[in-house]
Length: 176
Image (tube, rainbow, N blue to C red; front, side, top):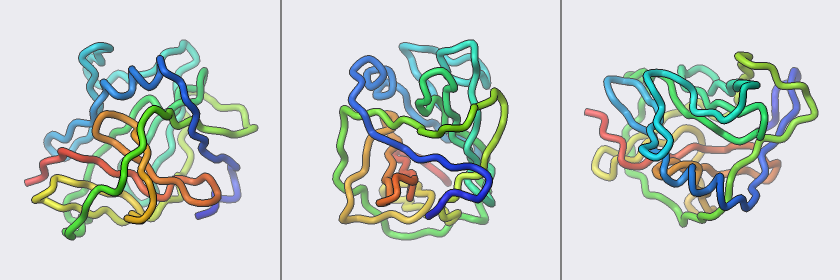
């Protein structure tokens, strides 16, 4: 999917051992219709965003949902995934996790000046799929034949040919 006309950006996968260590110890939690992250090694208090810099973060909001991914402005990595899940928008479906590739960190690329607290629309398919038995929650178009890259301990992404997010996959999400 293409970026909207207002902003041009893409994603790139790079190896970064220190950042990967932090990310693999971070997990996405679902509780009472809310998604938020948790990391025992790098505690997040209340609803604070999990970022490293005094520059703050900006958000990419999945269109027509209340879910965002936040980008740390200083290092352009994904530092948070959170928001409210509208249960009536979830489509129940049999899903499975494709092959997972680890040891990479997802970086956000743009030539634009990023500003703290600003939100851009993330043009990913807004459908939300859920497999209760496998506890898989998917935003976007999951392609089973394509590798998924670890974002956090239980969060994975797939990129399309244009280096855009095509889906976000969350495991161990228990929605009743």
